[in-house]
Length: 190
Length: 327
Image (cartoon, rainbow over all chains, first blue to last red; front, side):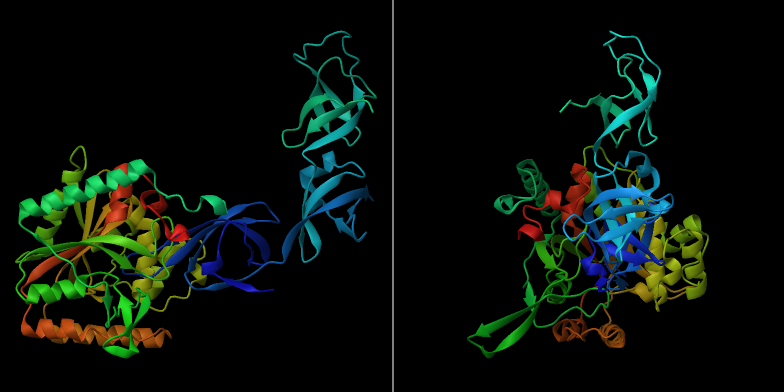
């Protein structure tokens, strides 16, 4: 992997830090008029998601990280790993619990996810912004209530629990915003 | 920024007017003070030897230089202005563009504007007062003035003596104070560690509620200032900070030509050590000092940063008609 000098630092650049792949969020050039120049960077550790600061002497070089994002199709979960496939090459990769994390509850087979690969292995799995999932369990609510006020919890086919309006019933498919975990609408019948 | 709008200024038209207003008030201040406005060459066959400042190079070819003549763009107008002083100009000021290679960030643009002025007969304390007067002429309500020695600033914030502490305690302090990555930094000069501590831990708190002048710098950071003997010896140098931002750097100027030559040679020795280009020292300045420059104090003030402060901007691009990305 190439190395980058501080002059190449910018938001989004992927570098290695303490053995982990990181992404630069912010790069600030700091220099007393007649003194040593430094680069103060804010970086996100892509494995842990933690944001940290780090100061480099300007002109230093750091090792780049072989990180890229790609759209992969979710295939199945074997109990330990989540398996994905590149729809063009049909190559498969498996992601562990650490990579999938909270996204697990939104993963539906055949859906396309944005997967961050480091040295070819998934480290971050992002579900689609909106997913359509079937309700497997919810209280039979009041028929005819269309106000949506209050609502009730509903368990979805992936195990996720979201609040839905009272009129939504078991067996129906609903659209959910995975960024907020909120119900959007009933899925259109087609 | 798409390709089609890179022709547009990075500053607003209101900001461009604010700059013009500021410049005219600065000129009025010096007119009333009886300080003469001067101009000097931007290009010089001599450069600045300071190991922490890099020059741009240019080349003239034509009458008088058929084979070409290498020139440096000035990083400050200091050397020619000192030659004017030695020639008997009396108090002078200049508003000009200066160029520093390798410097770009929220507070840096490789080409920027300096206000530089010299006061024969002044020392650095007297000049600090005049700097404060000028700033207070440009703000709506006068700012309180705080003066702090470099040593006091380090003692108060970090509990260490910057004139005596060696590299190890400075490095330890940087780590203990939580400068992330400090443990892995390779800085082989004490001053580099002092710069790290100053820029990360002290500077952000300077000039919070007014003007803060830092003065009496370590002798090793004298640059072109006089060194006053004593324990410890200190450089009669000052800097002005506004809202945590370095605005001006001034000296009770070194007038001893032999000492000046020794410092240029030492600068170039450090440049050679770190694999950087050696810069031809300004023999014209050295000759002027040998001929006799009046005792004086001088200061360089960053006009763009001052405008940032006056208008409450936090990015230098907002005060430049065209920053380097649009130049």
